[in-house]
Image (cartoon, rainbow, N blue to C red):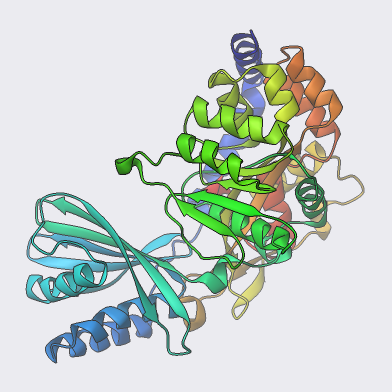
Length: 449
């Protein structure tokens, strides 16, 4: 069968290449070891603390809560973490994917924040021993509506709370802003222009899958098409799109809702996540019956995605016919444009670049003529070198040769080899190309991949 034969051949392929992998790992370890350690710090952090505590002192808990959320947006944070310890609470922001300590609260101050936060999110104030989830909305100074998703977790010293700050303006952007090079952009645009087929966006939590999905939906959104989404939960509201929310507690699952959704005559379906064989079977059936299906999987790479689907026991001939494109992705921090400067390349940098150029056939360009950049510490990037993030991608589009390999129980190795004969560039290679273009650093790519 494909699952055993493919895994066996792919595992053997990896085992027969220890020297190359070991050398790459050694280079990666040395580059990361040489990286200058940076710590986020800013005078704005102190200003946030002063403003929030002043509001709490005046008993203006609503203002304090709004201050935290608005400041999170100002400094580019996606999440606010309230972490309880013995005698104090730390407020942390996740800035460009990195958790940063902002300030501390006393237990009394935190109690005021907690009560207001729970009330705003429609959570039970008297329940402190079980996790709760909720959501509330605030308006920014420029009258934008900002949704905040709340999750509580009882621990030894109180209730930890994490707030996901959802800014709709940042959720839907252009493919170039997402970080797609022209070859990847061309492949993705071709895939979403089709009437049917399945497109999978893959990567771990926090890799930007939702942003990519919403950007694709915004490209496809028009009055002559019916788009239905099944989400858990709905993160951003899209005009003209029929959005529904999964509710496992009341039996509203991806499987049951997807079957009902197909009776609503949709053109395009977005399934928030494929979690089971039943959902996968229904989604692939929708793809085969003339629908464009978008969904996500939590996998590390395009190859892992194929392996995962095969291990979910989807029949090879169905996979070959239904699946059209896999987009595997990560997010890396961009070099701060205000303190960006050229850096001196190390021997390890040169070795990584030359190895990558050799693998993807970039001949005629030597590493001597390639420039690398880094930051020089400034207040705009909170002295971290980085500001904002950009995606790195690898895309596999199934052509007839790849479909034929899958139907014939071919191995993952054969599929990747055929994809390499086309336009496949791995995430690591895409990232290093972005470092060469001056978007990020080699160290950041190796840290994430």
